[in-house]
Amino acid sequence: MKKIICKIGLVLVLAAVAAQATRVKDVASLDGLSNQQLVGYGLVVGLAGTGDGSNTAFTVQSVVNMLKKLGIEVPADKMRLRNVAAVMVTAELAPFVKPGRKVDVTISSLGDARSLEGGTLLMTPMQAADGEYYVMAQGAVSVGGSFVADSKQRARVQKNHTLAGNIPEGGIVKREVDQAALSNGGALRWVLSAPDFSSAVAMAEAINKIFPASAQAEDASTVAVAVPVNLRADLMAFIAKSENAEFAVSSVARVVLNEKTGTLVSGADVRISEVAVSHGSVVINVDAKESASQPNALSQGRTASVVNETVAMNAPASKPEVKVIPQVTSAGQLAQALNALGVEPRDIISIFQAIKRAGALQAELIVM
Image 1 (cartoon, helix red, strand yellow):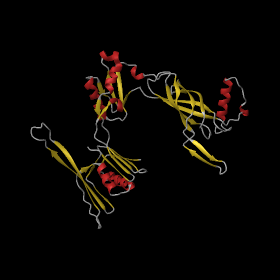
Image 2 (cartoon, one colour):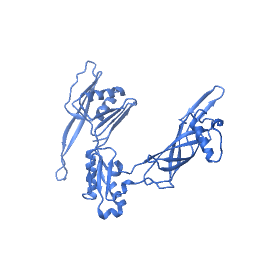
Image 3 (tube, one colour):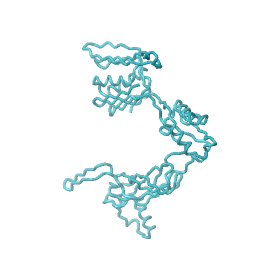
Image 4 (cartoon, one colour):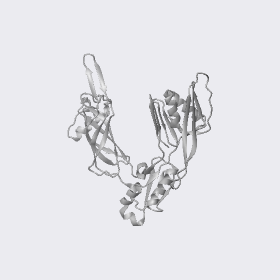
């Protein structure tokens, strides 16, 4: 099916092209190889009076404990902290990242600080759900925001959100994520990001073309692959060839509507059957007739079926007569016709919802 793109006013209509060959590694991942989410609690210092107030008890207690470890004892009731803020530090650690490598970390205020701009995160250990520490974070916080204040008018202008920031390459990996998927060299399991029975079977068939009788679809999202005995010594080469196997990904036909932005996205498999749309004094009839494309003699070509899609539009002054055409067309073409007539985005969304209720839209309708 051809690709249809039409943008007029606030409406964007997309019709996806037909399914094309996709590599295994673009739509699936090995079971057990996933990013490890990390979290840590730390302190940001060096703020210009925009840190946590004295009522934030955990910030005061954290500073007291930190100074005590450094050999300095200060009573908590004597603390007046305006340049320190308690923060939560988060990051994701990808598989196979070795100790000593650096990762990005995100900083978010935990107390009642007004801004983290200009602050520096002190050494913060980050742990995963298993309780093990994987990354040590530290560095200058970048928030990408600023304040412009007028002392006479007492006005303040804030740019961007200054209570959260990041530290590019601010975390140093101390421990590698355990790769459970590669511990059993005799079997691997590919997991699709979007479960679909057709896609799982197609992926198994694609792998079997490279390694015969090695892959089998277990369910809509999992394909089990048995590693041949003669290739277990070179498991990386086996995985590299498997993840580059190409197959056609199948998906459920969907139409996604965003009422706020007036955006409509239609998949390639979306069809509308037996429908005529009347909007005010405008009548739109959509029709698609199939014809045969016959190759020339001795050309060794094949006879193919071609769909010729047409759209008839009129805006009579009198009451319009609506005729139902018992044919099919794409959702993208109908949306394009509505958009060309100047129909408002909200009206287009209402029309599609009405077509769905009438049972003529052969797809899942998602309204955002």
